[in-house]
Length: 327
Image (cartoon, rainbow, N blue to C red):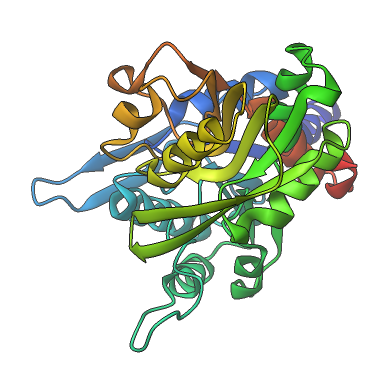
């Protein structure tokens, strides 16, 4: 009897952390599980004929710390709703804590009112995730830091820069040849932090004026890129209009090579045509959004953030510091 009780208590402690994946990016979730030495939890997710989402956990999560990996990438509304239903299923199954691991947080661009009668959808989505029953959110490279304030639950903000920086370091580009470029004024803080960790490289800024959603007009360049290797840094590439026009301007100003680096590869048409047009020496992205074969082109490099997310999840579960990863 005593040995049976001991075995039960040991098995309970070793299964306290549970990791489940939605259908948006199961490959990334599997990589995270491999890094952590875990098996992905069994979950049944299906669609009814009318499109409604059905979720059933196939194993007990009572008293467990549950982590749900689900980016809200295209189709954004489908994947967001699936995440909400997954959270609700875990809450009703008596999970101790529920952490929504959202490698790509959709709707983050609607984070303020720039014109009258606009929705602040980032706050709305934050409310939905909280009301569904999440206790914590873990997100990668939010479009703006203020989005963390929209949540009434803790948010762990994971920066994917270390993954891209390690890759660029392997390219062995001379530090005096480098210049980091922000594709717009709003991304200057991000580019400056990136430049500081890249041998304190100089900074240049593309000044543009946006005429409408997904339409950008580049005006001029602040900084010197002549004869340099320009590394353009952004949090996401959607239609690639901003970064492509910026790259064209950099070549006009005498840049020797142009690299594009971003965390979230949304790649809405005509992004692939713009990125593969010869403007870029290399386009470096991460797998926060799953890559599909039709979006592949020779200059594309996809880096995995699985180890970074796995280490963050482990630290959250063990109540350890997360910010120390990025110092």
